[in-house]
Image 1 (cartoon, helix red, strand yellow):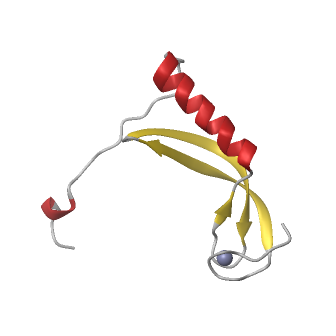
Image 2 (image 1 turned 60 degrees about the vertical axis):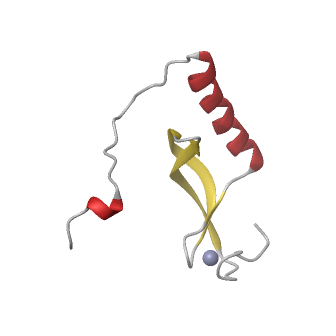
Length: 86
Ligand SMILES: [Zn+2]
């Protein structure tokens, strides 16, 4: 990637595989080991358009067409104002 990081202006990037959380209308899809380039300074992640399209397609297949995902997890949900003081 021959450009500057949009967030910090750094120009050094590394290839990395990361966990991507796709979210749409309070529905979530977690995809592990997604290829990206990552800013070496601030850690911002940049994904290729076809990578994101693939994840979006998978999301639609699961939520709209009932495709079974490899694995499902349940995630706790809280309201911030109900949390105990630190
Ligand atoms: Zn950066």
